[in-house]
Every structure is written in structure tokens, then in C-alpha cells.
Image (cartoon, rainbow, N blue to C red; front, side, top):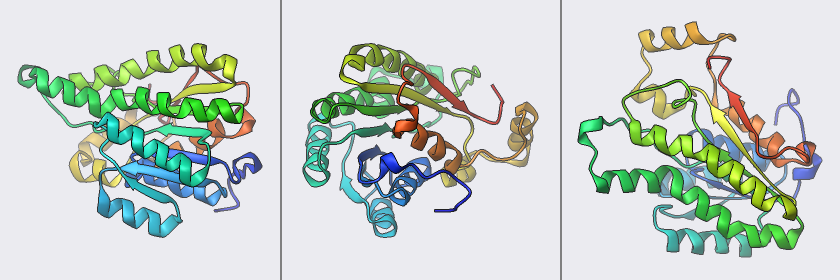
Length: 250
């Protein structure tokens, strides 16, 4: 890990679970937690990408389709058995596939909610008993700047991501007596390989940069560093909050 950035002694040997860790922002989180000396497990349905990240970081990869709640619960339990009680959960997994209002049918709505929102609740539900046994923990939910910026072209996604704010604040109240903190990290437009391949053009990047107070691309590592702070004891009295990392575009 580069000496430019903080090292958090409280993260050493801490049991951390990241969802969607096989690529993009999630893979960078897995890497940075491993750099801190944490014991890291991650869930993803991308077997090839997951195996690659596991080989690079030494983290435990548990293949899992988070839309399957029984499989999710079993995977979280497996992570706890391998690492010890999970005390940091990062609910990162999501897909911002584009879709039009007129094309959405009930099955698609339900699948998108399962992909982008429902698993955050059930992962939290599954780790809470472990955090209670450990005397506390940190749950970090990943939101999105899209709904805050009134983005169009993906109404089910923006609905799901807006709901993360309510989930975060409600859980923070319910779990505060157990010393379990719940916060939200809100990424701006992050230049992952997927975003670059699908949506980045000279024109779209110019529009994005024009809106940012700080010029330059927001990268996965920018999100990971905020997540590390919220996972560490340095943020011990921070809960029910949201932290936007977008270069000041919102």
C-alpha cells in the first residue's frame, strides 16, 4: 500500500465482507482492505473475476448470486466460519443497466430491486448477530449520485439507489444500541472498466468534468479510501450519514 495514504491499525485482523468484489469498485475495496491487514471475504457471481481478485489479494472468494437470499445467507455464514465474526460489511454490489420507462415489466422491476437493493438488507440482517457478539461493527452501503443528479434512462435503478438512503438511516437507528454503525457512501461517476467500456465518450466526459469542482476522473480507489475510514475506528462516532465522493459535481 502506498505510503501516501492512511494506515488504520484498527483494521488489522478485522473480519470484512464485501459484496460485488470481483471487479470495479468492489475489487479495489478488497485490495485495500487486504493491504490494511484485514481478513477479507467477498461475494460475487463472476467466478472468473472473483478467482483473479482472490489470487491477487489473498482474500476469500465465495461465489454467490445475491439475488438468491438462501444462497446469500449461506455465503455470509460461510464467511463468518472462515474469518470469524464479520464486523465490517460493505454492501457494494449493483448494476446500473440502462432501461426505458415503457419497457419495465413487473418481473424486471423485481429483478432490478433484487440486484440493487434487496441484498443490502439481507446481508445486513445476516451479519448483525456476528456484530452483536463482537460488541459492534460497521455497515457501509453504496448508494449512487444518479438519483441526486436527476439522471434519466434507468428509473428502476435510481429508485433502488434512492432507497439505500432510507435503509441506511433506519438501520442506523435500530442498530445504534448495539454499537453497530451504518453509513452510506455515494460515488459519483467512477471510471471503472465497465463504465469506460459502455458509456464514457469524449462528450460525456466533458459534460461530467464541467460539473465537477475538482477536475479529474473519480477512480475506484477514491471510493475505497472513504470506505476504509468508515470501517475503521477513526469514525467511531459516525453513523446515519452519507458521504458523496464525486469531485463536487452534485
